Structures are given as structure tokens and as C-alpha cells.
Image (tube, rainbow, N blue to C red; front, top):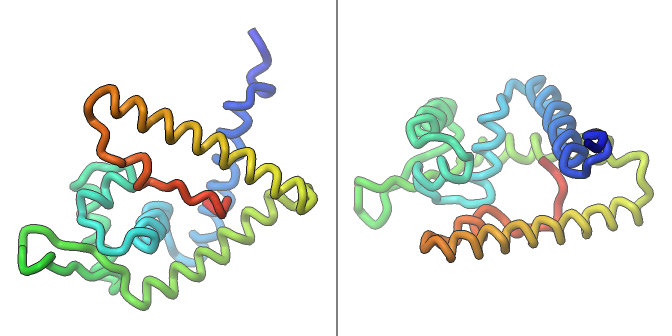
Length: 169
């Protein structure tokens, strides 16, 4: 059996976990939890999603997403709006205050990733991003093919991000 420390899947997972842990520690100093920054980031990328869609994007249960939205609404970070007069479906939008918070946590994300990549040259960092982007594309296309074979293709893999221009958490 090979040394797992040399296995690329373990290394990628470890690097992602270490970056996420460093980022969590830094945003916690701003009074923001992982769930809050994840919700803020998802809502910034996809304004006007429903509670169910946000739950899918965050990979949590709908009730958990609902409680998170309730807390964020109480903090003045989100507002719910009815869709075309249909009161059953509420779309969730960030407030201007939440957009300010998002800008702050994005700066922290950039600083965290820059620190993680500080031992790489600019060319190496660019190459790493390009290679990881290709791996991500391959995985997303595989997920789309798999979902299509099972008759369940709903574009979720595509919605969850083909944006490859950033390595921030």
C-alpha cells in the first residue's frame, strides 16, 4: 500500500482543509461563522435563489438553510422577496450591509490563499490554478454525464460553479 501522504487526493484534501481552517480562524475574528460566510458567498454568487436552492448550494438540509436565513435576516444581512406575487416562493437577496461584509471576508480569503501560495512563483501559482481548473472541469463533466445516465440531470453541477478564475475558499 502506498504512503497516503504521497497520494494526490489526500494532498489536495489536506491543502483544502488547511486553507479552510486558516480562513475560518481569520473570519471568526470578524465574528463570522463558517456557515455564515458560506451562505454569504453563495448568495453573492447567486442572488435571488430560493431557500431550497441555497440549501443545495450549501449542501445542507432545507431546514438548516431556513434557520440560517432567519438569523441572517435578523442581523439585517438578507431579505426575502416574493417571486412575481407568489408568496409561497421567497427569493433571498443580500442587503448592502451583507455585501460590505462579503467584501471584507473576500479580502481575508485572498490574503489566506496568497499566504498559502507564498512559496510559489507567480508562474507556478498560475500553473497550479490552470491544472486544478482542468481537474475541476473533468469532475464536473463526469458528474453531468453520470446524472444524465441516471435521468436526473438538472444542471446542478453546472450551477455549482464552473468559475475557475479564483482559488479563494
